[in-house]
Length: 223
Ligand code: CTP
Ligand code: MG
Image 1 (cartoon, protein in one colour):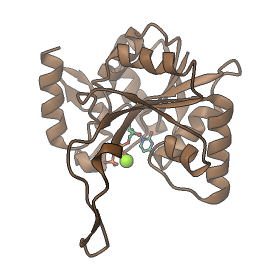
Image 2 (cartoon, rainbow, N blue to C red):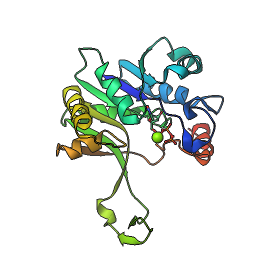
Image 3 (tube, rainbow, N blue to C red):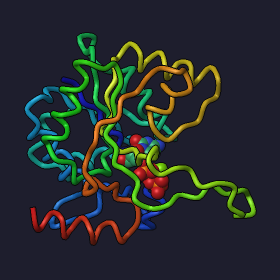
Image 4 (cartoon, rainbow, N blue to C red):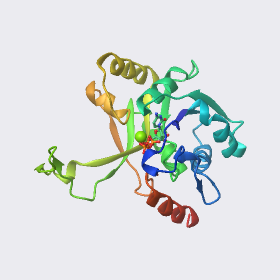
């Protein structure tokens, strides 16, 4: 199974002045912990890291023993562009692919395997968790427009898994139509292609703001 890791962001919300994936968490980079989980998965046999050329040497150094096992792909200005580059640079024998954000370093290897297994019966799958907050849709003046029924709300995570041919096609359509999305499942939704939800785990947070580093540190210490 092929797995791509988008790691080409700037981490602007982290306000660290550098790619947040290079920040230290319990002694190693965030990306190191992501790779540790990925390589513990029984199903993953090929891993591509999508990164900015200017981060390459620092990233390679920070992932230590995994540096020899990964394939490097240059990223783009947006996550969408980074994933598009990743998909277009997969080896020819890749039929299915999992996309997993470098920033989700607490992913459990078993959940990566679960995504892989569900891809046997579905063409597109994503890990997600039930939303526990009551979500408000607002207008530009922050006046509430509606409150969607929580029973139908799920918070999307990664891994997200797809057939390579379909994911390539979806990205091509996105370029043609100027679609601008924050995950790959969104492209399938715009194309009206079904995407199956797999129930994940609320510890699979995306490291986004400084508080997330503290939470992740606790989880890593206790797991
Ligand atoms: N990503 C990427 N290429 C980009 C932007 C983001 O590969 N041009 C990756 C990030 O490195 C991250 C994942 O996509 O692993 C999810 O993005 P996000 O959490 O938004 O990370 P950043 O874009 O780095 O953070 P911010 O939005 O706060 O700037
Ligand atoms: Mg971002």
